[in-house]
Length: 470
Image (cartoon, rainbow, N blue to C red; front, top):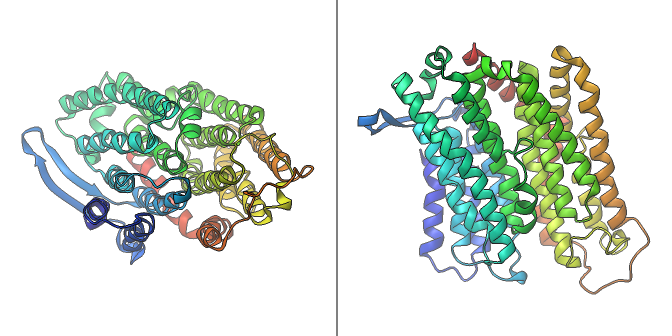
């Protein structure tokens, strides 16, 4: 319970105490939930809090941490401090409410990932939209407001029907407790409709192709902090919903629709890859790259094997780290060049070698270089396909080649072509920025070199999911 409450307490501290500069206090405070989670981490799995909330409707306040929720909560506690790295007071100090809103979002995400009651799950699913909207529009610029409103419209359209579906589930099963709902839903004739509604809600937020049209503008127009939170965490809410609700509740229906779902996810992988290849704006390139990678994860879920599901969970975790790092270094590049256009300047490795090689490191992580974090998850997903639909393996594997092409093209165009005349703002990374990026480098290296601790948890989570669906 303390882990859930801590972000709300930290938000209150930042609102009540008039710090001269809130960036450093916010960053230091953001380490609190991560420290609490890391301290004796093994004891968190199995932790459970249960209280009556709305007895008349059988709604309970249940927070439950298992291997699946632990990994997503850990990702949340890692990404929030990273998101503060993107704040640069030189470009204007964020308003006082900006930092508490990040903590509010963190609290809602922790509650969402730990929710053991379907009504509570839905409450947090909707509540996280409030802080993210204001984080996406800190300056009130028209482009930011348009992108944020488009995101809200898509998400609310999907989740409104989900609320109706949850009320229908209560009528059918007489309960909102997630642990007890799978069997009653397996026998109802309304299963296809309920499944379609939940899939639509989760597909929009992840997003699954073709529900992605909000993504490029949202990722490109938002401040880097909001973009990191959107791409690394909120996209994982849809993936988590499929793993927590979709597969356990509707596995037979998803199996029946597997051809359509796999086609959509593989189309998303290919579309995202080719769209990224065509971009002249490197933030939009990274945005479409993220679309491609999350659809790769969804394909690993929809193929419904334990190996691919374990790989999808691991890949969701690792993608969150990598995409946050890519948007962070892209933001630093934008600060120095005052543009996101790929073809404006070239040869920047001559003037910013540290930023160049660190960006290349995260690019290689994104393209799943062996020894870095994304390699293991993608290989497990491909193994899952090889055991069930081997003819799809070459198609998915080809997308890894496509990702290498568009990411390395970005590096070549910006850093390794004929140097442009030097501009005064083209300074390399300073000591503080190197200090910020070092732990992220470790987070990319560690799962690539020694993935066993994470694989232990993803394997347990996959086994639990398949035990529940059976």
